[in-house]
Length: 344
Image (cartoon, rainbow, N blue to C red; front, side, top):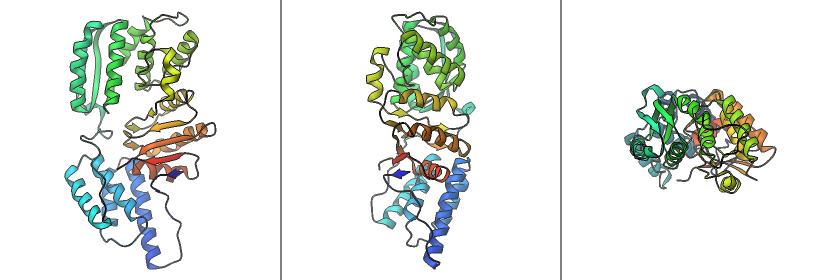
C-alpha cells in the first residue's frame, strides 16, 4: 500500500541501541493499532503513552504521536488532545494536527445508548416540517438512532422527503442508525412492483438506501437486481442523493463512496454497495473521512474485497486516519490499494 504520509514501517537494521529503540516503538505502534481494532482503546492509548514517555530520535516517533492524538479524538478527550498537541508542536517544531471532530461520532458507543429521534404518523408531503425538525435535532446529536416503529402510512412524496433528509444528514457528517426501519421498508414494497417502470422511482431508491443502512445484504442485493431489471440501469449508490436513474451515471462519476463510521462484521452489504458503486467509475475512490474504526476481525475480509476490486480498477482510500491505515497495512501486507491520509 502506498500513502501520502508514509505509515510503512522500516525494516529492522543492525543491532544497536537505536535499532532496538526503533523496534520497540514499531512494536508499540503495531500493537496499539491491533488493540484499537479490537475495541481496547484505553489499552492502546496507554501503550503509546508509555512508548513515547522517553523521546529519542526515531523514524517512527511522529507516526506514534499521530496515533495517540487520534485515540484522544476517538475518545472525545479534547482537553487531553490539546495538551498532547502542544507537546507535539514543541517536540517536532511544527504545527500540530487540529482537533477534527467537534463531537465524537461514537462508533464505539452501543446503539442502544444513542439518542433516539422518533418519526410518527404518515410519511407524506406533509412530513416536511417534522423531518426538518428531526434534521436539526440530528445535527445537534451528530450520532443518533432514527426510530420508525410508529409509522402508519407511506407515500412517494414522503419517500422523497425522507431520502433528502438522509442525504442531508450524510452531507452534514452525521451518523444515522435505524430502528424498526423494516416497518417503512414493508410499506414501501406496497408502492412498487418489479417490472413496472413507474415515472417516479423514489420508492425504489429509498428502499435500497434503507436496506443498505440496515445491512440487510440479501434483501438489498435482490432489490438492486429488481431495480436494474425494471429500469434497465445500474442502481444508484447508497447515500448518493441521485435525483433520477437517468442522472445516475454522471452523478456517480463525480462522487467518492462514503465509508461508514465503523466497519464491523458482517461486511457483505458494504462490499456489495462498493462493488455496485464501482460500476460507474474508472477509478474507485473511498472517502474515509468519517471512518473512525475498522474492527480487527473485519479488516481481512474488507481488504480481500477491495483487493478483488483493485484487480479491475485502481482503488484509493482517501482522508484515512493513521489508526485505520496502520491496521490495514498490518493485515494486508502487499496490496494494490492506495491510502491517502486525512489532511491536517
